[in-house]
Length: 192
Image (cartoon, rainbow, N blue to C red; front, side, top):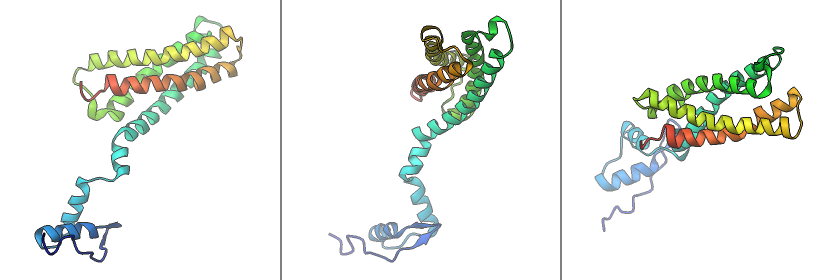
């Protein structure tokens, strides 16, 4: 075994708030010299922290997905309430208003997810991607509509507040889980 193994403990060198003492020890043990500041920076970039890996991985997708969804939520809830309060007409019925508002939000969400959340994973066949996105979104919308239908027509909670809680809190929350899973592992699956 080499005389300088294990690496000698050296004083901690701090560069940009990070300690590189362990890199100096291993580098000097292998090559007989210490790393330069630029070599240290490159070495730490190639092995990102747990937080960086999570941010770039599933957590990053989920945060971006949530922000895009928040924009879609504002569109969905605003249009749902506008249609519900717009007076008599088929569009003012709870299920019709929710169907129309969710349909518009689906388009907004597709644009946001395609060009921001999953931009690294977007495919060249835009038409197929859009069809798959719409199918995944419709699956989520069906969860929302089922929740609204059940509370409005079966349980008899027919006020605008009850419709908003049922559709835009409970139903949308459950539908979001379905949509995220389908978007991530079907529509924008990196292995497809």
